[in-house]
Image (cartoon, rainbow, N blue to C red):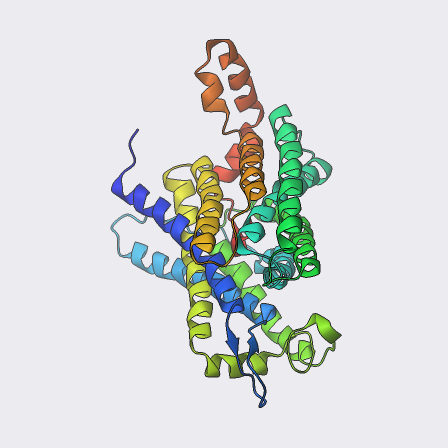
Length: 377
């Protein structure tokens, strides 16, 4: 069935805003500006402040939810399911996981390329799959296990490409690239814990996806904003690229923004894009399918990589192409995107139908509105 204009708009919006989200964060990291003291210009390196901006974008989804409800009240017959009453603190544990994972990934983005950052985030299916077996009692289908092993192979190839290109890249030191890649993978472990917590405790309740994203954004925004105060006094030596060598110097960040206003544009791009990305992702799942959402999420990795090459932010490397393709195959197998192809082959049609039935519960959970908060999937 052909897509409607509205469905095409949603798909384009998800692909565009998802790509802008990572590219704008990396753009902010690439600016040089003076800080609060009289000193030479230096890179804008404030990952925790960037994470606060991202949570502000998620928080905006809560406002969007209430606007949607107000608009729906004017209809003769309301269509929006407001969901049942729930304890908002159910969202606190996954929000804290989101906060930690996002902060770690923004630290890593300072150390590695935008394309590698996006590709390595594919590691989330490995840890989510294993944790769902351990804590949710789920049985993974053979195609999911194969997808996990192929994803591991893809991660090794991308890591190898970064190791080789790190010796030639003057913008990032090899040690920084390796550290950044490892931090991204470590963050995916926390993201997978977040997903398991959401599935076990949150999605048993009837909560509108926009309300879920917004509530997690509320907790993440206010907790991390408060944490910026002690971070201003915690010394971390050369790990931090700010004059006082503390974990996060928010005042220095505002001074740099004052000297280079384009940094504010990049940060606003990150905040606004995450809000629209979550809205578009939820709408794509509802209007088209969860599978389409997964495909679009993989496509934005390609968009980020192509744009980074076009802007000269990174250099072309053949191994990275291979790694991306292997990761794509692993993700496709894990999410069952191969089933429509098998169904067209007479001798494989029965196998495809059995496989589809075995993974029906996972598809049901996705189509019931499982959300990707914090752009963490």
